[in-house]
Length: 113
Length: 114
Image (cartoon, rainbow over all chains, first blue to last red; front, side, top):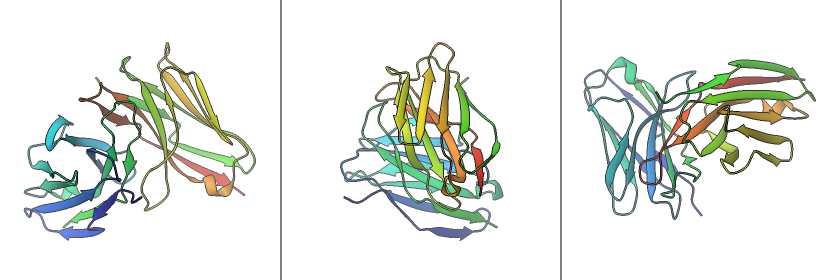
């Protein structure tokens, strides 16, 4: 039973560029949530995908967008990168229940220069 | 607004002592409260969780208590060991199925001194 996987592990970009991060959920899970974790901080909710639609969003600008595919995998896209976007990006998968556990992937460390 | 406060931000204990981390949430509709342990450079790992229909849950050396009236929940680690050293995050689930999300606390860095 595969856990949550993410790619790439690390990424270095320059300001103004665009980046795409990928996530495959735990087997059987249908819901993917994305989080940004700055150094020394707790994860901050970006958005959540279910049935290929974004249905919940945190306080992040439109530069952050995403997609969910029919196989439940998901992508996070960030446009016009800023230095402040440097962080660990975590995806978490779960079943579609508010009381269900979210399992995290290993994260993608994004550095913006 | 939606908020989870976590205290303390750092905690040092002697090996074998107990550690307690406390969180307070703002949304009275929250009904699920997980705790995650994150070691340096690794993903958050669920260590224990509690749902709003119970007041306490225990798993070996780890326990969580929930006071819904006060909107408080706490993590208790007994007989601490050096490998317990990590950052611990509490979270509260806000919303209902179809529109829920987790709000995380700011984390507690626990250091167990040998």
